[in-house]
Amino acid sequence: MKKVLWFLFFCLACVASIWAEPASAVAKADVEQCAKEQKASFHWYPVQKTFNMISATDTIKFAVGLPYASMGSKSIALEMAPEISEGKIWIAANDVKKIFAPAAVSSSSVTIVSSSSATVVPLKPSSSSVAVASSTAVASSTAVAPPKNETAGTREVKTIVIDPGHGGKDSGALGVNAQEKDIVLTVGKLLKKELEKEGFNVKMTRDKDVFIELGQRANLANQWDGDLFISLHCNAVDATPERKKQIKGYHVYVLRAPESEEDKAIARRENKVATLYGEKNAKEELSPIEWFKLEARLEKYKQNSYMFTEELLKANEGYKIRKQAGGVGGAGFMVLVGALMPAVLYEIGFISNLEDEAYMMSDAGQKDIAERISKAVASYKEAVHNYRETLGR
Image: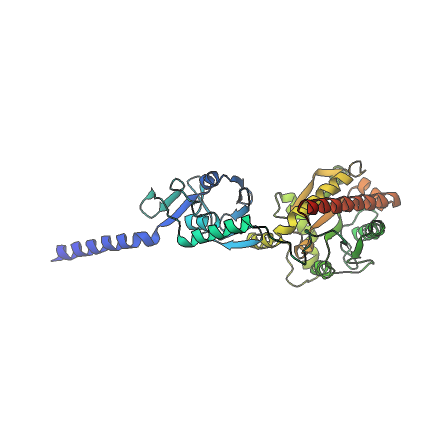
């Protein structure tokens, strides 16, 4: 009798495992193989554990362990967070079908992963996927009229918002002879005059020695409906006197996920102001999931931020303060987070370096800096205008 009962239990266990198998099985796709099939380029960033798939029309961004992706101006919830196993990166096959066309997932890139085995199986596109693909094709083939009220970055450049960093109780970085808040305020005022000569409508987040919260600066820029936001700062490094002599130069930053520890450190230093003075919801660093949500919202401004950065690099040719490294970086600067327009944070030099500090303090140096930024803004305006003309606007 016992043998019969054990045999029955064994049979029931086998049946239960068979029934449970489909529920535990997950259809996963090899990301690199999918990219090849979609004729998209694949870019892996091992430090942040993020990767991009760039097709002819879209850039889709992922992060290992996060069930979100960003594409264009939207954030996409994923069925499964990307994962790494057996030396490959995997995402759910259903997520690939959701993001790409219905035929995006071929049998060569899909594996059913279960507790017992892995077998390659073909997937059929769902009717909903077909509907999405057909509507996308119609949308791409139909000319879309520009909106009546164009957003910053797509319209003619008229209003420039200058943000002299720090101020009031917040002195910013300290040099041997100067304070960051004073240098950037003077440069900001000179820049305002130069831009007004060029016919721009210019606003300043502060035009005197007062403290303004980081979040409020972006809010002001939005209220003024700015077309470009320029936050002025002086860089600094806490190091030995010999090291301070070596580290110098200007750097232009855009709002993007940092690609180096140096960029992260600079952003934390600038963001520390908010936490130091008790600003509501202040933080020194953005989490990976916050980056995904933020990048999706600000994607439409990023390219114009880079466009202005390029013009600033050109305008700085021959500048006494040479660019540091490549001159361009990116990080989560809180002062840029809320600005709904192309925006940059410009570290005009190292106040901790005696040579840079002396030039940034001098009348000739401050005038030179203002004129170069003004020249970059004028060139950026022309570039935007020319691009609009190619679109028939």
